Length: 301
Image 1 (cartoon, one colour):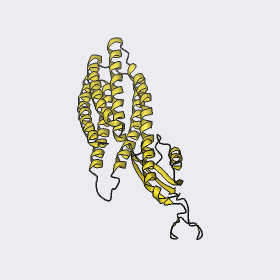
Image 2 (tube, rainbow, N blue to C red):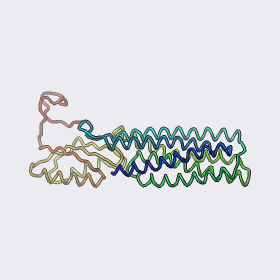
Image 3 (cartoon, helix red, strand yellow):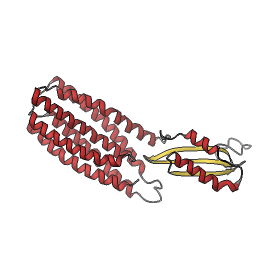
Image 4 (cartoon, one colour):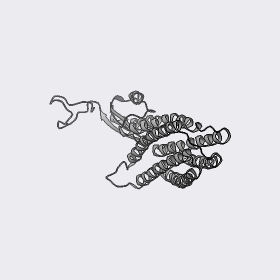
């Protein structure tokens, strides 16, 4: 995956969001709009999240050296996880503020609030589109995109509240819409946290069927057995497979290696390590996994 595209997307989005945060904060003070001030607060948290994601991407791209053979790709997953937790906190804050406004609604300058909210929506849509193009294979950018989506929904809510206040005098529209926004954001936050945890805990990616891979390898001509099959992700879009394959004839090794790589690619796995073993392969006596002096073969589970 090309992380330079992700860095450009995060940089432009950060500049757009952080600049308008200042504009919306000033607009909220001038119009006495809690909705705008709250949305400015949301945009401030999103600016911080975008900055975290941007710094992480730069570090990951520049990480080199023999002490980092897998790079620092897990750092972007960790950042995405923290952003997901942060997003849950933001949802709680929105719900809390909505409750307070429902209990104590205050008058606002509807037309001015509406104008600022419309500009905010345009900014969020631009930033969201930029991030969306780089989010499909990068969980870090995906989590940043979700933050921008919360802002977009917040801008829509502010517009609807501005319309309700301007034309109907309905001050309770804002807290009602804020609660609806919280419910819409929750599944996305859960998705980012779950996907990040799956990578950090080295679980089999949800899109990969490890048993199906093992079954297909066992069906290959010359394969006697398969063991120690492990599938995990280094980061989103980078899946790794390691497996021990027991063969009956040494001359079949190259054919079997190529076929295992083809099977892995069929499951979206882009990094494969295969250990070929002859039938009757025995570990050395010093192997710590041997349970007794008479056991010379085993599965390395």
